[in-house]
Every structure is written in C-alpha cells, then in structure tokens.
Length: 233
Image (tube, rainbow, N blue to C red):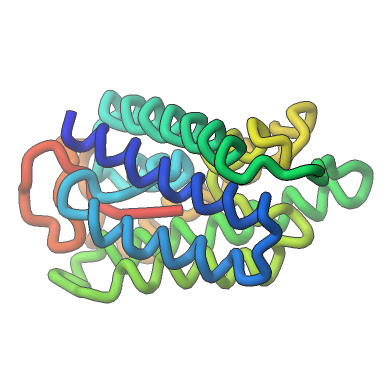
C-alpha cells in the first residue's frame, strides 16, 4: 500500500501543477511541470519507483521490473490521483474560459504522432536512467526525467497538449482542457509510446532482461519491498 499511496500522491501533484499552471495560463508552465515531476520522482523513487504515469508503468512491465498485478494497482492509483487533482485544480483556479483541445483531420494525426514520440522519449529516459544496470546508485535520474517532460511540453505542447501520460490526459479532460470525444488519441499514443520504449530498451540492452518479479527500489535495483523500478511523467 505504501507504493500505491506514493503513486497516488506523486500523480496528484503532477496533474495539480499541470492544471493550475495551464488554467492560469502561466507562461512557464512547462518549467513548473518538469520541476514538480523531478522533485516527486526524487521524493517517491525509493518507495514506488515514482512512475506517476501509466505509460511508464507499461514500459517498466515490459522491461520486467514490475508484476502485472502491481502494474494494475499502479494504474488505478495513478488515475485516481489524476482525477482528484483535476477537481482540486478547477476549484483552486476557476478560470473564466477554457480552450478545449479537440484535434481533427490532419491535426489529429499530428497530435497522435507528437504524443507517441515524446512519450517514447520519456519512458526511454526512465528505463535507461533509472533501471539500467549501467547506472547503479546514480543521482541524476530525477533531473533527466523532469527535463524530458519540460522539453517535450515546450516542443509540442502547442500541437498535442503535451500530456505524455494517460493519467494527465484523463485529468486534462476532466478539467475541460481535452475533449472527451478525442481522449482516445492521448490514451492510444501515450500507451503505444511507452510500449515501444520498453521494447527498444530490451533490444538495446539485452543484458538487462529480467523475468517478471516483485517491484524493486529505484534507482539502484536493490530490493526494498513493494517499490517499483523507474519513475515519471
């Protein structure tokens, strides 16, 4: 339960920051979002692995560092945290008007590709920085993960909304930022990006292949009870 609670808390503050900065139209929203993800990764990495993102959990599952039953519980905690944060953000900020992102036509396919690419980048960075045997005990994994999200938000936030995270997408839809009728775009793109990152990691790091087992602590791979390896977005 410690791991699941940690995933709830980390995802809550990630989506709360996304909602509060976007609803308030903060000019440096990507910096704030990348920063909160970074500090929450450092705060929760030793407990749950600090995924805070169903796409990252999927990548870690395919990589072999979390059991399916734990992955399902992580997904539930992440979605619950995102929805709670969405309600909180709209109550705190209460914007007068919100622009709903509803890509269609060519824009839909461009948004889908942008989301998939940067979700792949995020999950790929997570797996390499926080789960690779080549980086035992490193202290840079949180920075790497947070900056990946910030870079992606600056690069394609205006195209796809820059979710890179199915839980964030559901939270954004709850806040009226994404159209519910197009939510499948973010869910499909983000989960596909996470899955591709997991497969790419195993293809490029065959020595890191591991059978499914109980989650482990990030980033040093040392056993620490029910925590999961990796982190993020």
